[in-house]
Image (cartoon, rainbow, N blue to C red; front, side):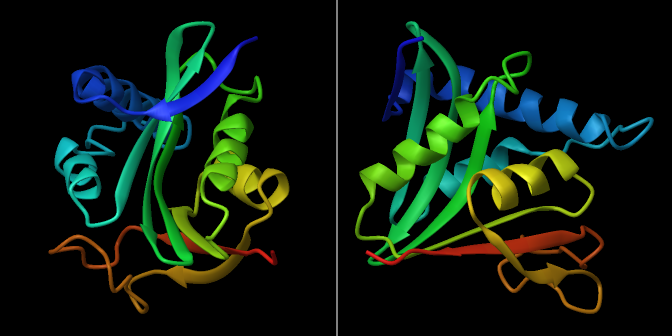
Length: 167
């Protein structure tokens, strides 16, 4: 298997966004019956892509786009906004390769952060057990994420994770 993590080209945006939205939607559908709401609106992806310090990557395996990530780098602080593996390709180590490559590409980052929904045990396992993150905060109606999209009333329940590196 030939793996590469490359900068995302603008020409790849439509497929990248579609695949990411599909992966998030199908992932959420595993936990919620009769899911009708859109889990990851394109506007959230666009906001991340347009954030100062944002870098988007595409994961290529054997010449095919199989996933990607968007990170925001601010000096020694990095935020993983999104990481996805294309539906049907999960559980083959691609997500781990994406994360390892991101860390390698950003050796100056000593603190990484990310968030994931409380119900997604697959993500909880991935970030804690595979990538070495620690859960440090739980966002809920009594403790709303200060960076939540406008109009978010805290009904979406998320864990915030951190990974501190010593270099």
